[in-house]
Image (cartoon, rainbow, N blue to C red):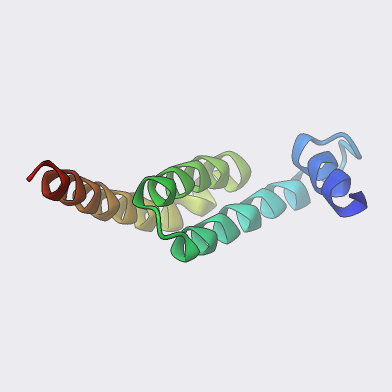
Amino acid sequence: MGIALSIIGQMFGILTDFFIPGIARFIGVIAGILVLLSLKSRNTEMQAFIVGSSTALGIMGAGILYFPAAMINVLIGFKLNKKLKEENTKEQF
């Protein structure tokens, strides 16, 4: 529980206002971890949600530095959307 509270404190800047670059990098790392978690999930809808939220977190945390990774996340999102549409089409038949 202490680790969870520490992470929440880092994400929302409760602990300090002087270490903004470190907090931004921390949020960027969390975004990368979320993408790795999406690879473990078997549910396509959950994968799409995780990739989208990690892109938003990464851009909020690291700004322009996260742009290359965000572009890769967008491409992954398009691929997951296509896969989701194919699954929905198969279910209709």
